[in-house]
Length: 177
Image (cartoon, rainbow, N blue to C red; front, side, top):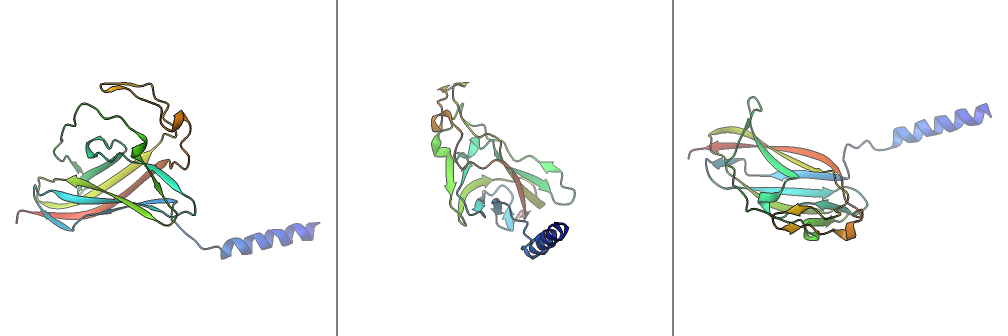
C-alpha cells in the first residue's frame, strides 16, 4: 500500500511538471491605440476581447459609449501614473440595458468595439482600460427615468457569462503638431 501511494504521488508530480505553464485567462482584453496623436484630436481606441478558453464566453458590454459603466478608460501621466480627467460628456438621461448588450465570444475568437477619447494635454500618457462584470443575472424591476427595467434572459443566470475584472494598458504621446 505504501509503495502504491508513493508511486501515485511520484506520477502526479512528474505529470504536473510536464504540463505547459500558462498565465492566460479564459478572457483576455487588449487595447489598441495609435502611439501618437494631437492634443484635442479624437483618438479611436479599439477594445478587444479574446476568448482563450475552449468554451463560449458571453460578455456584458454596452455598445452605447456614454453608458459603459463596467468598462472605463483612465488617462494617466506616464511619469507618475497620476490620473488626468478627459472632458466629461454628459449622457442623455437614460439607457436601459437589453439583451443586445451581451455578446458571445466563441473559443479562440475575438470581438472588438471602438471607444473615442480626447486628451487636452501634451505629453506621454498611459491609457488604462478596466473591464469588470460582477453580475450574473438581470431580474428587472428597477425604476429608471425611462421606465421600469425588464428581466433579461428571463431573469435567470445568464449562460456562459464571464465575471471578474481585467486591466490592460497602452502608451500614447500627445503633441501640439
